[in-house]
Length: 314
Image (cartoon, rainbow, N blue to C red; front, side):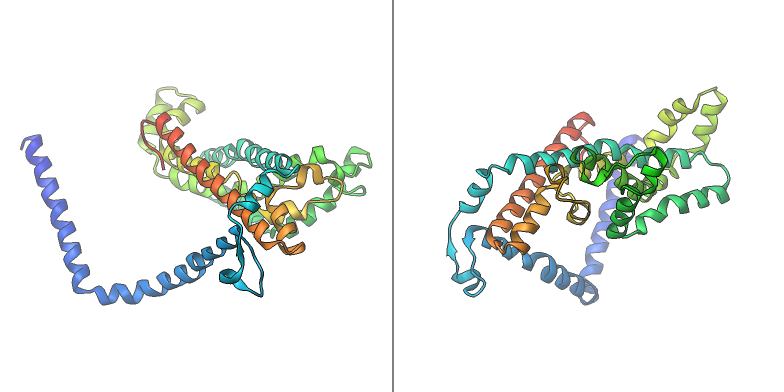
């Protein structure tokens, strides 16, 4: 059978399956409605309905007058934030913390997955995975408490160094503390996806590479990297697109009055202005600005990666 005939048969088979699927859905649409409606309603109520709250970013919001009764001020709050003398500091702190976390933290789960894949004993591999995954289940607040204890003046780190430095009051140490603690907590759990992708790597090809005398790096390049390449690209695009979305809880929990020059980011600023100062419209405008920047970054990174990866993006 010629190649064209095989292609035609394949297309006909695919078209027939699609047609049969559409007919089946039409005949049993009630079943799909019953199962999909709860998820659809929950998504609509808890995800999309609250988005109407962004309207107060364009108002001088008054809780007593409500959204429809408050005065519209257009882009007043956005202009106020952009013209704020602290705007560049908050933006720079947010970007530095995010970019450094991405650069230092992103490769670690990949390296862990590659190392785990080389462990031959299943028993030892499971024990190592258990140890690596456990930190992910530690609460962020508990993690910050542990960090504070370890880095306190009388903590284990100072006892080991024979010093009396309060690391939590040093602005220059905040980013390192934030990034290292984040890697310790999340790298093991993040490696699960890469470990799962590595299970698709051809064992026959790996054995052939070993037989040909390939070293570990050559084996990774020829056999293991192609198996996780797509997953790495997807995760990089998603993480790069969330550069401005630093978790508020951890940054706020590690803050002190003395490290504010490095630890005050847009997320903590929104918290202070919105919940502490009660400036709801301004804090909503700052949060919306942050979200718009994230969307732009996501689209930009996706296009850049697609150009570098033969047109394959997210």
